[in-house]
Structure formats: C-alpha cells, structure tokens
Image (cartoon, rainbow, N blue to C red; front, top):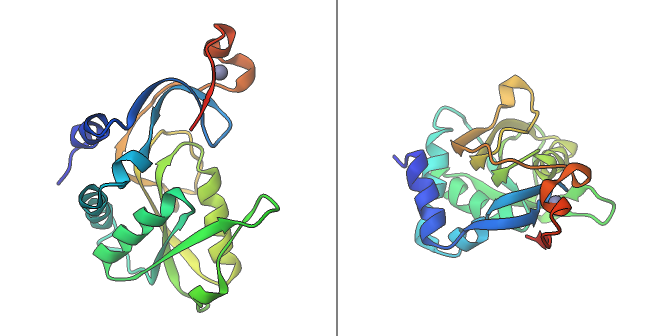
Length: 187
Ligand SMILES: [Zn+2]
C-alpha cells in the first residue's frame, strides 16, 4: 500500500511538485501545484496509482469509471483496469458543461465511480458526474490521488483520496502572490 509520503515522493521524484504562482482549474491561485500529468506519463506509476485508488473501492460494485478529459482519462483507465470495469471520459461541450460520447453506450441504472487526479473544488468532476447522470447512470463513489479539502460533495460521496493536502489557495482578488507581482503561470 502506498502511503501519503510515497505519493508526494513520486511527485517530487518526477518533477511534478511545482512551486511558484499558479492558476488552478478552479480559478484560484496557489503557490504550489502538483502536476499529475508529469507523473502519469510513466505507465508504471499510473498503474500503481490506479491500483491503489481501486483498493479504496473494493466494496463498490461499479460498471464503469469516468474521469474528466484530459487529466482524468489515464487515471480512469488504470482504476477501471484494476477494478475490472469500463473506463470512460467526459469532455467539455462548448457551453461550459461536460458530455459523454454516445459510443460509450451507457445503460440506465449503471453504477459508476468518478475520478480526478487532484480535487480542489471538484468543479470539473461535478460536471463529469452530471454528464453520466444525465444519461441515467448513478455515481457511487468519488476517487482521487490528492484531495485539497475544498470540495463539497454529499457525505455519501465524500472523495476517497490516496492523500490529503492543504496547500493554501487564494481567490484572484486576495492573492498575496499577485500583490507581490509574481507572474501567474497557467497549469
Ligand atoms: Zn495570484
């Protein structure tokens, strides 16, 4: 079993643990960023992470795992492989929501687990979940590599994470890094 420190070591060793001034997908700013893409480019790391997250759902019978594109695609795949179910991804649809391709052929009543590498506010994950629920499936779990503790999900869907981190993050209006004039990097 990977423990929290192993996960962070993996990010450090692969150069995925960034420090500076970053614009998160949630719109918030942060002095630190964990670039999961850098870790997940190594299939052996992606596989281990997928297996560890799958263990958190050993009690959950799921028909598929869904992740928001692009970051959630490989993670959904490795978690699904370990669980022995299908791997789907949700894509932005141009109106700010997410959608699933018809080719995934979801049947009403199917149960799914939603995954994302790092959950900050969980905004994209909520849209991916809405996309799958829209076609009649029901979310039975949320998994991630790292949870930053700012998400709000119903108690029965509290994210199961390999580790929890509480890096500071700020709204653009009250970001001390902006006030210091440090250039903002998009990640
Ligand atoms: Zn800032």
